[in-house]
Image (cartoon, rainbow, N blue to C red):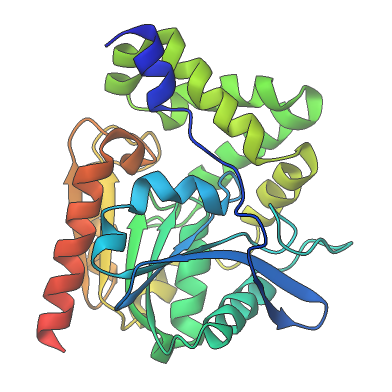
Length: 290
């Protein structure tokens, strides 16, 4: 692959749709969203590093079969900005308000990294609204979240002591797989960095990383989730080993773990097509049992 091809592979069109509608979710809050396709709803959850447009390239195949909804969290992207960063409970209320506004009774949730905590909280608080969970590179651990939060604190220190480009250089070898790092070299690094810089401000990242260290970290909470759950884990995920991934899935009453070969902490970056095929297979199997 040429340097230009590697650059383009990881640089995405992150432009927002002009005149896109927003949905009022609670007092003083309106969320930017994008809805593509028809059928069963699949909703993506941002992990404070992504924006709604980012998901287009990782859900395009799913949108051929389902209604894919992506949105910006409150205080991020093109959604309402408040003086105070919302709590996990408020982010949960926003998602339910968004579903209500779009006339969606229940949805599958696709979450990545820090947003897997939000997916967990929504499934616990509103089990009737969640048909299933897909947790890609979860920050949830079979014995807790201490290691994940230590890494988030290190990222936060780098951000506050330096800047976003330095934060990206710190994070890159930790969330990108060895395979992707070697194959795409400097051009891929620079392309993904451009996307990263375009999606967030220092304030957004500071607030998101701070919130990510809060909330109940008890693995016992996972045993209460009744929604079918798929753990999609890269075998090169620096935070969770394949063994721990299977242990984590076993905590969910209806959990399963699929290991994605040669993928890192955000496995759909490594294999968008393979990831979407896993999600579609999971949804089809769950719906067959309903």
